[in-house]
Image (cartoon, rainbow, N blue to C red; front, side, top):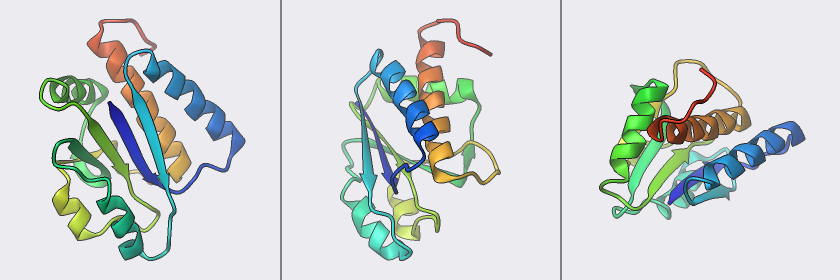
Length: 145
């Protein structure tokens, strides 16, 4: 199973449509659950919400601009290798103020898709696209390059 735990809800219809499309595509390969938590200006309130989803039986990955930068093929390798050892991958997307040091210390991996800043909803769409792309890569299926 893949879980995506994120702070905030998607309000824009065009992003919701793109997310729905990628969710359907991913579900052809694997179970997917998206958990939307209430965002708050206080990162310690957000920390309490995120802590409920960190489970040592899963591989917990924080998407963090300061994490290890990965290419699409490296991301696909990570996903493929994880499923050999863990039943569930949990991706965490923090709020607009980031996450606390405690969250950063408790996750297993921190991954960055680059140094740019983007809106939360757009980043969630990028994450779903990269998860979908990783399944296409790992199954040796063609996909736009």
